[in-house]
Each structure stands twice: as structure tokens, then as C-alpha cells.
Length: 200
Image (cartoon, rainbow, N blue to C red):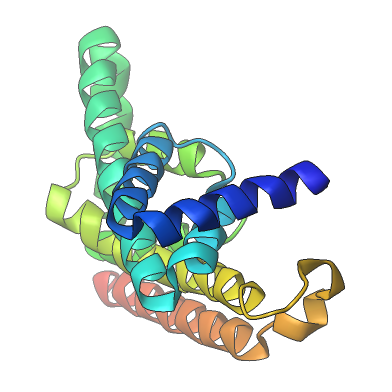
């Protein structure tokens, strides 16, 4: 644990000495991390809030997540098309046709639901024939709540005199759960409406 606090102190010292360079290096790290869809993104987002504040932390986190996921999506879309063309075309057509009426809603819903790892989500989306703008927009909207709360937690932690004295109840946000639940309900209702409308 002492090593963890030593690393924190080292990064904070570099921020004080050269803020811009440290911000650029950290942003590139986030982009690389998300381009590979590695686990632990939430911790990285919290670190961005801890080191760079709420607004800058959220900005570099969500942009790196959107761009990184897009790079992963494009790479594996091309890879699957080249290596498994028949399987890709078969499943891509079936899934894309099924969600076509509410594709934007489904994409946001996939991003909103906590649980599925980022790599699994991006792999699943690589099968779909969707526009890059739709992919980026749904990623931005869908991941914004969890990215914001992660950055917010890191930002709140930076305001405590001692991280060792922090308990989860000090920073847990009930408003965030209500907000996310409300968004989920709206999306489910819209999908249900779209499907019902298509049956008439």
C-alpha cells in the first residue's frame, strides 16, 4: 500500500513540475489502454479525476474511451471480414437486421449496462455493420454516466486529507443510480415502442 501512495506522490510531483506534459502522457496512456480494451478502465478514469480534476479528467477519459473503442472496432471489423468472411457476413446480417429499427437504442443500452467487459462489448459490436458516427455517438452517450461517476469519485478522493480514512459511503452517489435507472427505463420503453410499431 505504501508503494501505491509513493506512485501517487510521484505523479503529483510531475504534475506540479510540468502539468501539460504529464496531461499529454496520461491522455496517450488512456487512449492506448482503451484501444486495447484492457480491464481496469474505471480505475484509470478515477485516476484522471484525482490528478486533473473533474472537467479535464472527464474530457480526456470519455474522448480516449470513444476513440480507443473506435480503433478496436475498426481493427477487428477488418480482421473478422478478412479471416472469417462467411461467418462474419452471416451473423452480421442477422444481428444487424434484428436491431435495425432500434440500433441506436440497443447500442446505448449495451454501453449503459454495467458488467460486460469493454473488450467483449467491442468484439460484439465488431460483428455489426454500423456506421462509425453511430458507434462513436452511442459510446459517448452510453458510457458518459459511468465515466463521469468514476472521474467524480477520483476527484472527490483528491479532496480528502487522507485516502486511508475514506469509506465508500462518503462518495457513493444515489443520484447517479437513479439517473442511470431512468435512462435505462427510457431506452427500454423506446425499444418496446419501436418493435410494437413495427408489428402493425
